[in-house]
Image 1 (cartoon, one colour):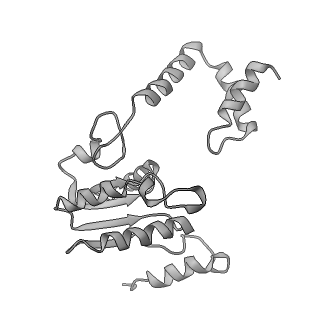
Image 2 (cartoon, rainbow, N blue to C red):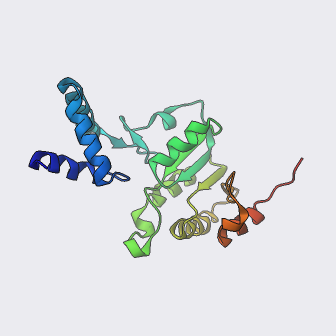
Image 3 (spheres, rainbow, N blue to C red):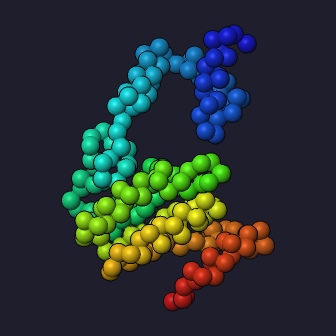
Length: 198
């Protein structure tokens, strides 16, 4: 394999979910593309990396100081959905079921990886709540051990705000999952979050 091809494959395989075989296919595809299209792609990636910002209100990605969601006056400003990463905002937005605001933590508490609460944007969240107007905080955190640790930390931290409703997204068994293959923690959450059938 040529050194140039090896370099491109090595760089592409650094992306999450891209192994060397997929990186090779992508590199070959780039080679087949029109030079202008490749130049547009690399320019757009470079612009993104150089110019992207984090919203000063919610820590979401933005072209401006304040992201479009925080700037949208039609959104329900009394509800904040707390998520781990920017990708989680996109997932929830794609459902078109939520019209409140968001807060992106930037990860989860993970002592094994050296991530402490102070490494996350928790203080920014508490500052938003302290300013008033927020009636509900929805914790939409993953069900991993680190996610559960973060969830409990946030619950304890937010309990001090009088009149603030703290909720968590429902957890449980996914559609199409067979009960015998589901772990105990997931079954426990499913039982705790059961609802009446109407």
